[in-house]
Length: 266
Image 1 (cartoon, rainbow, N blue to C red):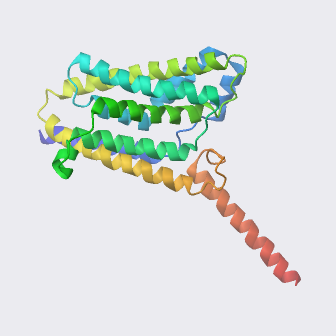
Image 2: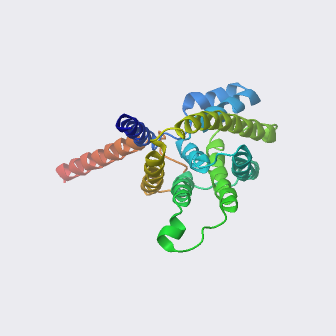
Image 3: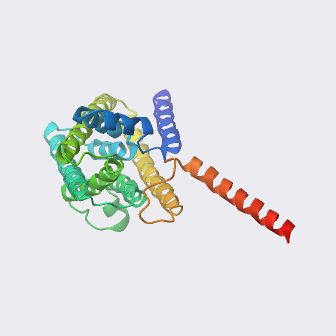
């Protein structure tokens, strides 16, 4: 049992490091954008699938949803609720051109991860002595928010005006395929682990980890938003937090050099 607990702790540590390294790597690369331009709807499908598989915030939320579900009917019901929610806003927001700063959306998505884990540990009754909100309803609502996050990413791409709806649908189908693949792996891992003695302590640790991770993502996204001077700007120049800090330092150094040159002349 000690070795199994150690294994679960190592797993959580690895996930934590991935979160730290990717906290601002949630965007799409220039190569992916070019592949969209050069390709057709199949490219949108592929990018949608790979985007979901690399979307750690969405995956953490799905992991929280299914964590204690053991019946296939319940899994289908709750995942369908999430899928309907994020598909609705993904399609509507992209088709109508609705744009919201993705740092703010991703900050709320981070809180959604913390929320689902808090509900898993029955935190509303345990700590606040109130009944939990209807979980199915909340998953639909939070799914709508996740869809807005996916839409802001999709709208960063040069979408075709003639085939806009098909581009959106293809991307969304890819999202769902990626979600199914990730969900299958999660269910296999959890199904096998539930038979282990380490599952109960692992379940407590993992849901506490999801709460901490959710608030961590919220903090990092709000920190990213604090760097955005233009409310219509959707991200850092290189879509990378470290690159933005380097750019800011270069601007400061240039300003200092200009000021010293000016002072030496006068």
